[in-house]
Image (cartoon, rainbow, N blue to C red; front, side, top):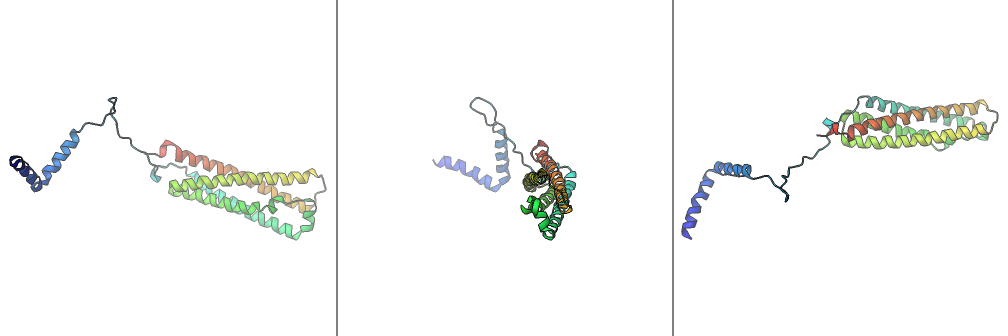
Length: 213
């Protein structure tokens, strides 16, 4: 027993005196270790995980222009809604007799103003930073905006169609209200078109393999 301990002690003391020799020996042993194999003899290789980073997200530069257009559309909805309120308050008796401003009463111009501006700002910031979190937020806000635009298109179409079915004489107040609702319908259609385009571009940049490393 003494002989065995005497043989081990010098080796241990030499490693303590010269730590570089120990590190070299450990590195050589790691290099000589065989690769792990499965029970069937197949060599298992390490799988490299892919992570999305902002530097590898390729997003079209036109996304920023689309976002600015969405902000402008939101402001236009607010202005048209303000004109509608002004017309309705000034000429309440003339408008309310035969024409039902369903779009104004539902508050659609102002809800659209809020959602369209938010989605436009997120689209602009997503193109600037190309952060995965901002891209997800932009996808959600543009989806909400497109859904709201479809609801507005339905309300405005129902409002104008319901009035025209009555076949009554149209006075200038009612014609002005129909004109404002018609402008809201056109800009809502444009917002629906832009939101779907931005969503398709962001989905293409975020979920395709070009943004992975």
